[in-house]
Length: 211
Image (cartoon, rainbow, N blue to C red; front, side):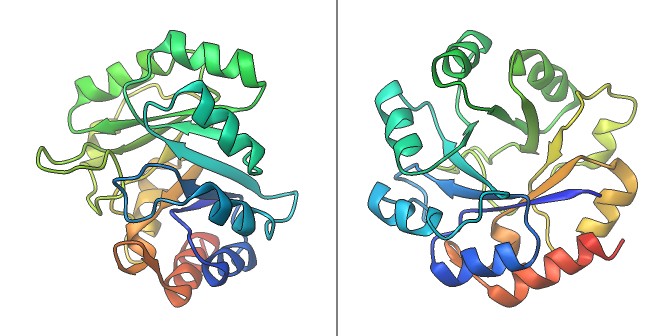
């Protein structure tokens, strides 16, 4: 069964809804320019609601070791790197923390996919997202999908995930075409940037699990 990561959660209601919908991963954003950014204190309160079987993922952008240590202390158990981190940096973070490390990469061309696979290096998982528009300030969560046909014939690493522009209306098509190990949704379960909808969380999960 394809697993779900609900990302950018910021309220108790959205966390509880995501858990109730059977999420395997909950994503918490630690990147101040994002409308989904959390302070450490606020994040710790939300993370405390999450049962042990559900992974708590920190979304980070070029974070330093001090920031990584702080989010781990808040209860995070998985690190998603969504910046310009090199394979060496990914390896260093993984070795120093002993935690799973994911690499998120933006995609607009087949060359981007090839580069993402190479750049993931020692990452535990690769998450393919839509490449952010040039004018965007965020590397992800912009509500746009990339052309999934770009993945035809590509040899993706086991456990890879799909993100970018997913919602309850199109995730079924994505699963049928691509069969990713997990799907990651943020803006597709929002009423406005940073404001999650409990009904959209439930609808997304139903679209995934109903297959």
